[in-house]
Length: 272
Image (cartoon, rainbow, N blue to C red):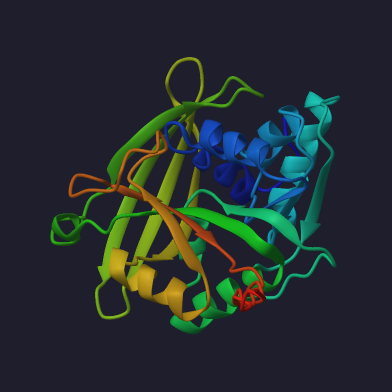
């Protein structure tokens, strides 16, 4: 049984991810020049598979407990071919004294920054930590306008998860309210841990806030802080973003140094 707090354990369960997200980020990491950097890496749900795929990777998170869980998981799975480093830091002001070819932010974690000022600060700092032509890839959800007007007065079932380390089943519920003025979602997750008889043996609450961002709002923000937009996918299978998409996977690039203009060719007069 893990010795860390209930919050870190809840985060570990919650970051089981979206279908196809791990494979997508591992594939992108394998294409990049190592090492790769993951921001808001949490308990290592994506960081560890990248290292298992043979890519050197750094994982940065602002939660000590989550990094302790990630380290414990990595120790149990070693050895693996890629080098793995965890660092406690905030995406708004981190510096690892090196620049990266690829920085990723899975799990919609960029939305944990609730103000425009914090988003700008983080995106500018990330750009400073990228190599010229280096890429930033992150995913966020598409705001559900209909869902915002639904009745969320009662908890809704999210999913059932089985912890691979303890074989315990946990039922996850969600209670949500929307602050449309500030574009913030206030969510309470309820984790009911069950025994073999299906009885609740422990209930854990986790409150979180997420800022929701619309497509063109994000596009304008990325351009304003100095990124070139390469792709916008509507799924981790790289399908094009369209009206039916529920996820936005952004692939953006730090512009490189402009090459000096070529001198024009001068035609010299022929000597007869």
